[in-house]
Image 1 (tube, rainbow, N blue to C red):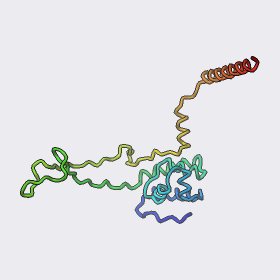
Image 2 (image 1 turned 45 degrees about the vertical axis):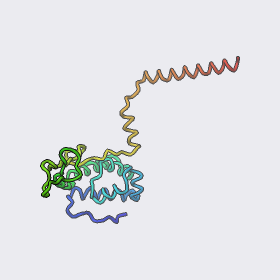
Image 3 (image 1 turned 180 degrees about the vertical axis):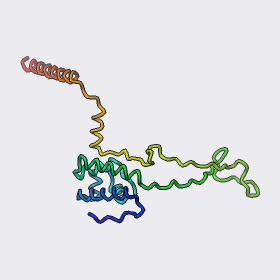
Image 4 (image 1 turned 120 degrees about the vertical axis):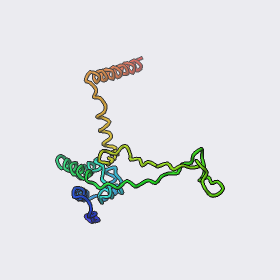
Length: 194
């Protein structure tokens, strides 16, 4: 623990502070990155990227690390605030320029069609500029939060989506179960006496 590689000098202060606090929290667990990955549903390589500031962690990864480290209440909220500040300040990679793509015109052509003299045949291929599609799931900051949740969090989420059973419907269910049990008892009693 504690043998972290130095963070890049050009990191914004918010990012540097957040990653340093995240490293301290990870060290507090006493776990290896493999064990941390097992307990949080984020892989060892993901934690390496998060803790070396090469990629911002999803909010759920930070929450999972807090849970594993035994952090609760206000301290977890502080980590949430640090995460928000860091994600806003996190350096964005420049969008790489995309060269135009050559698209054959008039059907599949394995390559440029030439006419005698070495010139491409008119209309044999056309230059069509390619578009660079930014994933639609990115937020306004350009950061995409990882929707992956540990399985135990998914159970809580599913139960919160189900409408709570009303008291009357629960009582009706218990009454129906009781009636079935009494009916079975009557049938078993009749068979054993008869």
